[in-house]
Image (cartoon, rainbow, N blue to C red; front, side, top):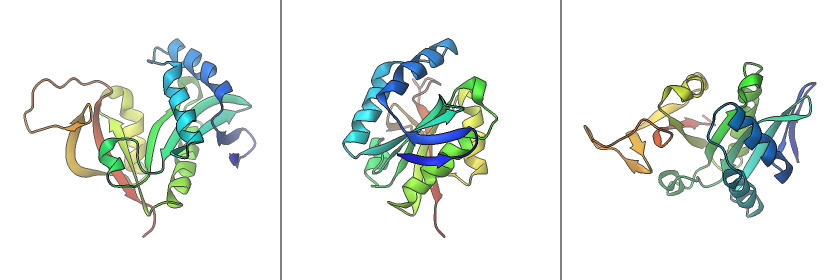
Length: 176
């Protein structure tokens, strides 16, 4: 299914053919990548748990995102609200509006299920552009502080690593 199309960019559902392209490109830019994450997204999509989208730029897969209808993270899943998960645009295709279009479509998808949408953003500098984008789009911290490996961190807690598992939950009202 096509969700968006303009002169250069098409947003469509993720397909198994996209996986090897993303794994190869992400490894080339020194990201942790493997097929299992993408296979899980496609399986969850076929089971109706999420809608996984791919951005094509001039016909080439360059970005992706998934919208989990009732959340993927345990914390959000208990709330039974949509969660935007794992948005990514390959570095060489950034600053062309692709991430914003993926977010626009993700929010439109989420609107069909709830008047709010949630996401978790990593806290290390690799997530800096995502952090800025979410704040500009009206996302706000939910007030629970930071979470590590799926657990809420206590004040002054030790043993936390600034890796991809250290996150802050943000939410946004989609309708006023």
